[in-house]
Amino acid sequence: MAFCQSPACVLALVALFFALVYFAASAARRKRLEALQNFALTGGFCFDPDAAAVPQQLLSVLPVFLHGSSRKSSNLLYRSSSAGQTLVFDYLYVTGSGKSRTQHQQTMVAFNAQVFLPQFELCPENLVHKFLKLFGYADINFPESSQFSKMYLLRGPNEEIVRAQFSLDARTLLQGLPGWRLEAAGQWLAAYKPGGLRRPAEYTEYIEQARSIAAALGLRGMP
Image 1 (cartoon, one colour):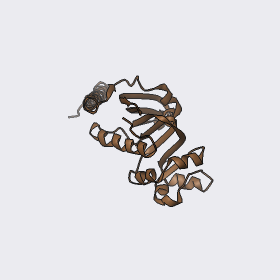
Image 2 (spheres, rainbow, N blue to C red; image 1 turned 180 degrees about the vertical axis):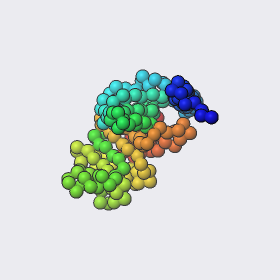
Image 3 (cartoon, rainbow, N blue to C red; image 1 turned 90 degrees about the vertical axis):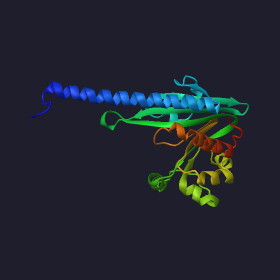
């Protein structure tokens, strides 16, 4: 006997499917929220689930926060010291529309330091970058750190100052930490790995890696 062939029955099943997806997603968000609240308590962070405390200056100065549309920050953890401020938060934005619409999510670690940073962007180098270099795409390379230069694409408007920022220690550290993206300007440095949100269980290692990168770039003692 045929099962549920009427339009009304099909619509009911579709509605049930989307309801289950919605409730599963809501449960996952609640679980993440609770885990991050606990992490904040044990890690000495303040917690702001709506991320209202993310400074507008940060969101307006670094390119990663200017991409796409429907930009949203959430689940902000932050703490401060005399050296500056550390912020960790979920960040979402959308590119494209219709069938080409893509949602991007990543866990950001941002540092507001008491030192000036030159404007630069660092990201893992890929085949597209290598191809573009054939047509003059600018890249700051270090002949004495060939492995670093193979792994990462480094760009900035003032090459001399950016070179000085990336000491041998910083380049050596990043060689052992593949996949990171960095953006800096003024007193802000953002570090993140694309490809989705970090699980709360990964936060300790993720934040410590970002702090070690910041220290190697001269932002020592960040909270």
